[in-house]
Length: 517
Image (cartoon, rainbow, N blue to C red; front, side):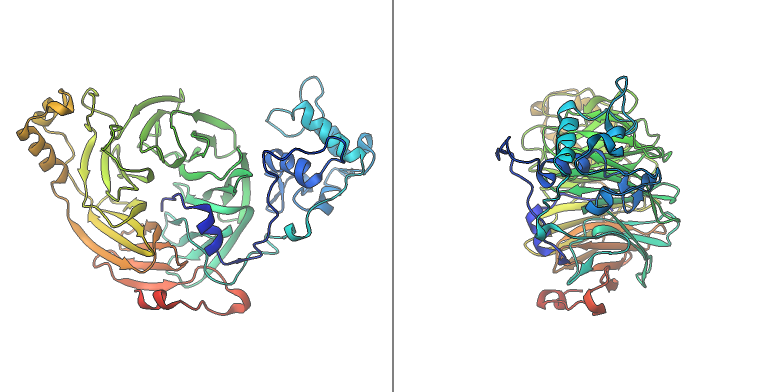
């Protein structure tokens, strides 16, 4: 279920999507000739992407106006007025809408007006004739009427079953595909603006789907889809790179996500208004989850930390997992909350799934790991996804190493009340624990750990999710196939390609894929 960070190059090379051609954005060090005409592609388009296209795209054409297609950009919306009249800024309705009056502009709504330099640049571009200098190899039309065409299965970065167990959301290229839960067919294709989809999660009531992704090195985006209507209700542009790890608050009002600018953020699901931004991470934030009552947000990232944030105050509260050098050996990619408990399962580069208490019982001491309540045997490679069954009886982790993957399913029922003798030990600096105290801590944190089933695959696992009844675990990743695994014995009950292939042909597995379950 939980999304994870993958190297951009690997995803682009293995996605197998047509078309894949896109002109590279101008390098930061590139200096544009101030005497040259204003470039739509290099100067104007990035402004529209960051500030306007979220509400004016084929999936959400607010006011009947689309800004992702150049011809429609110059056209007429529901107002009946021409948006851009080449050579005449004063006759262009778009200019009127984005120009502040008494300090405020009509567009973009509920956001700060464009900067004076951005506004001046757009006016100059229109005055110069609103020329389209889009490179020929950059033209690609991907929307609801022109969905992605696949030559081979794409890397799957995220999976999620709907709460009623009827649908399975699968991340694709430029879209999330809604499948029948048994893998028997595609129900809908939710095609949006972002070409990279990193995370997709159903709301607690199943009525909406939150999606995190973006355009690499250009912008991040959070999408909110109405599942029944198959309609994009909210699009929130965020920053200048893809965003990760989307999650819902228990009441379904907030959506949280992580950013590569080291921040964790949350927005109102109904409006897209940002209500939380916390910057205590020191590297990319890759996954998020709310605690049981939604008062706190827990996030993990490449900085090897699990951080606790108070939602109301946006205040960083604590490091949940140990930040002592050596306690973790690499970044954290995934997090899932134990149902009904303020405890979180984390996984990352060291390949060790660990269960932590969210709120500490012992005062923090130098070098301690006092919130740890269970640790599981190391897995091969990096853990990219973790999940809990809805009843909390099972937990799972998926890993990847050198083109191979592992899905491990464990018993999830534990007594996590920290014994008095261990709490007493935590009052010391960790380096001062006695041999008996170390033994007691080790015995407590491994008690009841039981491997229920294990599935070995010849493809890295990047995403997994339990069905609501806990009987099935869907897993996917590197090779683009979705596998439905029986949780009782770890056997693959079904394996299918989640995307329609070019010409309608079925995928042709390579030698490795043929050998795998």
